[in-house]
Image 1 (tube, rainbow, N blue to C red):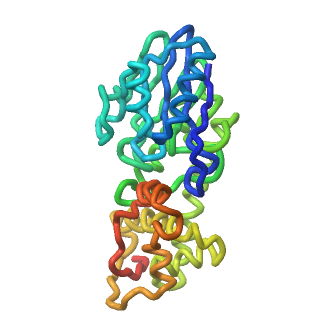
Image 2 (cartoon, rainbow, N blue to C red; image 1 turned 30 degrees about the vertical axis):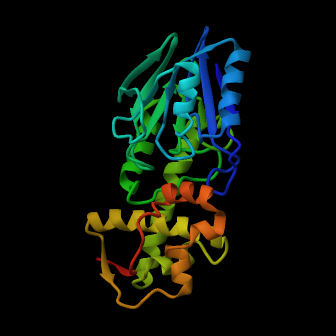
Image 3 (cartoon, rainbow, N blue to C red; image 1 turned 180 degrees about the vertical axis):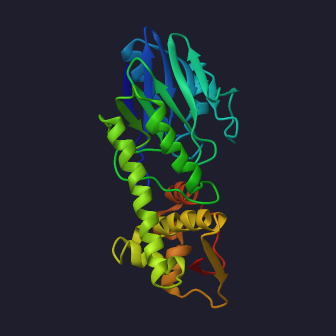
Length: 302
């Protein structure tokens, strides 16, 4: 059985909040992504497990971002359940998840797929009885996912999506890290694959007109609206462009001119003053905003 307990941390990046899941079988349970360290959310997870009549045997993380992982240790301290994460994770844990294998705690069993792209410490879990994929920030219940260098990369992410499309034919449901449950897993994976292909075509079509900077591309591909999302759009463009550079399809020429106000708003916005320190931490992690862009490059097709 899968039980959702949503964290009370809604925002532009986390949608209605981070989804924590209690996956139970018999009297045993695994908690997937206990979320941010909000005491009442930890309380809610413990109370829901009590109501279900299950014992939390393990706590596992899809990845280490600050809206998914910090509650792991407080929940472990209160339940005695050990914490497990990807071998590449920087999160303090009791053990590593067995990649491309099976993780078992009590009567609950999850397949573990290495799923790089959004981050390089990301996994996807699969529960075969329910036909349930727990995708963290690889696939969400609404919208799409930010792929932001240096913590993420586009081609590994696209390979992860391709693996999901072929390796889990029995998957029926997707439980993402944010948003609602998805009841047609195959259709959602296909939608995500096609969306990435579409955005890359749009970028290449824009560059076929003339060489452009990332702010140029953001405004041309995404438009003038939704200014709060410009920085996320910029990081998406950067992820595509880095992949295309590696493949020898695009060149990048550094520009000497300083960024103007609009370019700076797109590339290096002052997050703390815009959204506050707490949300800024999540945004910095999601958007790779620790990578301060010192100068623009003009990108051109080869």
